[in-house]
Amino acid sequence: MAFNAIKDDEWQSDVKKSVTIKRLLTYLTNYKKQIVGVLFIMAYCVTVSLINPLFIESAIDDYITPKDFKGLAMLIGIALAVNIIWILLVKLRMKIMAKVTNNAVKTIREELFTHLQTLDFKFFDSRPTGKILSRVMSDVNALKDVLSNLVITLIPDAILLVSIVVVMLLKDWRLALFAMAGLPILMVSLLSLENLCHKNWKNVRKKSSNVSAFVHEEIAGIRIVKSYSAEEETLETFDELLDEHKKSFLKAVRINDLYNPFIEIGWAVSSFAMYFASIKLIGIDNLSIGTLIAFGSYIGLFWQPISSLGDLYNHLISNIAAAERVFEVLDTEPEVGDAEGVTELPPIKGAVEFKDVTFAYEDNVKVLKDVSFSIKPGETIALVGPTGAGKTTIVNLISRFYDVQEGTVLIDGHDIKKVTVESLRHQMGIMTQDNFLFSGTIRENIRYGKLDATDEEIIAAAKTVNAHDFIMKLEKGYDTELAERGSGLSVGQRQLIAFARTILSDPAILILDEATSSIDTRNELMVQAGIAAILKGRTSFVIAHRLSTIRKADRIFVVDDGRIQEEGNHKELMEKHGIYYKLSTAQAV
Image (cartoon, rainbow, N blue to C red; front, side, top):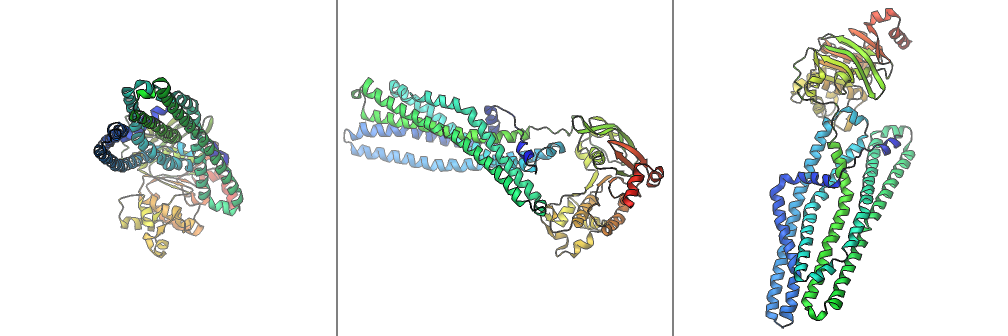
């Protein structure tokens, strides 16, 4: 199985966490009014947190000690009203931030999906679909909590922390210093564990991605798994991936959990230092009971946001890796794209020319070597040759799914690198052996070739490829719902629908890459008869291993070892007794 490829394929770069967090926050700029409202709510909440210990101090020193119970009742009423408002505002804050963060995450996911569609085939060739899916779904989902916590936890807790320090210093700077005696312990723990924690959570994300990629691959290939009775081996591999994910997660959690003991120790040290100082150094007689209790409350308030910030930090460390993974995809530039100064490709006639084209999918492994040819508009060109000879590569370069390393590809005299990709592919129709059918109706799948097509045009396209009759025999005809990849239809039926989709687009250049290989002989004859009129006057490239399907081509290119070894029509090539002759006679046996 492709287990090692799934495990090893991860592309991650090291970026400063502060840069990632700053970039994340930019997605909140569209919600400035809501954020400002949340900040006002948090300012009120911070103020309430600061004055609650003062309520206690005043209650003890100003009302309980002098036995002013009327004043005490009034003070309790005020404190109760203030805190009820605080509770209501906290709920409002959570509601606002939930809406803001969900919208921000939606924006990120849309931006990521849009960007993925701009990336070229080379990006997808080297990455399992499951890993890409993991970044679009689970990694983006992880950003919701990060965005929310950055606003509703980081900002108010940081403000509260600074405010408490100021209040304690103003009330008694000596006790304030002792109340912060445990901070060095916290700082040591943060510095010691930060990088280790971040590294392990990145590893967790990688292992999670491995699981997603494996599940996607196995479900997509479930027929193969069942055909070879490989369920047990598949389960063993899946268990191994799950075990790796579990181990990486538990390791990351164990390291994360080291923060809390340091916080608890720092809190205890600060409390002990404050009470020790108040009794032994300052003297209990020099402090009111209310002040001492207030300082005890402030110590709790001081370490509570620190503990909260510690939890937030742990959360950020665990999820910032997800943000990095998302941004890595967003920062990936397509190798095939529109350069500056490109123009729209005008309506074409279909002339195609290769000038000394050399191409390699991987460095130093040339698939095409100095290939040159010229195609007139309306010609039908057949490409034959052994597997891996470079036939599909030629049509991929015409479609500009990849860019040539050397040489030039011209269409109607236009260098295809100097025109927009959209205007090029809009005038091309591509039909492959494994055409994908989407979930939806047959009508919707055919209309994908021309989104504004009428029902009459859709039916005409289906009739052209002889798909109309079998479609009408289905219970709902063109409104028959297809499952993913068109399961429920035969391979030949799926191919005919895909062919109708291609024909509907009315391309100037038509590419058929093993397009009839999945259709039985009877249906193939029907399709060939149906598309004869479509090919007439339209430049077309036909790749087929069954040589019987390309005998009527205007010219046949025999491709081998990255070069065009022979060229001519069927009769001319048979008379040469060369490579084509051997291929043809071998199939005739």
